Image (cartoon, rainbow, N blue to C red; front, top):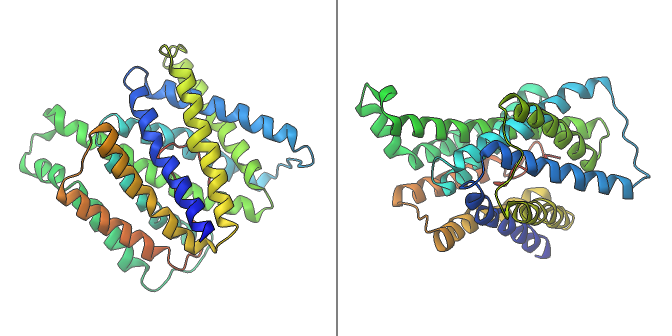
Length: 313
């Protein structure tokens, strides 16, 4: 019971991230927020590494591609896509769509690691996809009603927002598999996190320079960013792993279920962002499908909270 409660508390912190991230995006660009997010994480992880001097980082040639994937795509591109979607559509929908990650992770594990799929994987994957389609059904309907959607700024925004959210789903779900591959090579969680966020930070720094982005945050943003990283990233993941130590990983799904529930409630109560009936129904179907997909997981899939600061194991 304690393990599930700890995971539920972690999920609440992940959901509460919206209360800080969403307002920050009103006065800062997506790239700037994600850049400083990674900078603060790299500083924190360097501190942890210095404290834990007994752990040595040994690089292996076969680890290059997994590290590049989770760093450049999983960390930098995935977080940028997720955060961009936040600015263009209902944040709650962005969060709920991330429940598709287990489907991607298990499918990629079968493709990259040769892990067998459960017999009913295709069925529950289809249920998850049906739920995600139901959530954005009005947007799909509006798109199908016009052949001139490429001239409609509103529909273009919908496509870009949904596409960004799904890019985050794919790269984060795939990063779970590459992270799993690194653990099989003997790398520890904090080593993987250090490599991931360091490569992500370098990628974002290059993008900042390439796009001539200002490095100046709006007044009062840095303390809020620091709180967001410490709360939903570092503390949230510490509670999550403490919970997983006490219960089997597959039971962690029960605690993780509280994440989208908490996100819906927080966004509704504090940001006045409700869901329509079809969005709630779609979210329920999506959550059901994702739970059934991971009921007997072949790999240790994990929730990627709406902060982009959590590495896959």
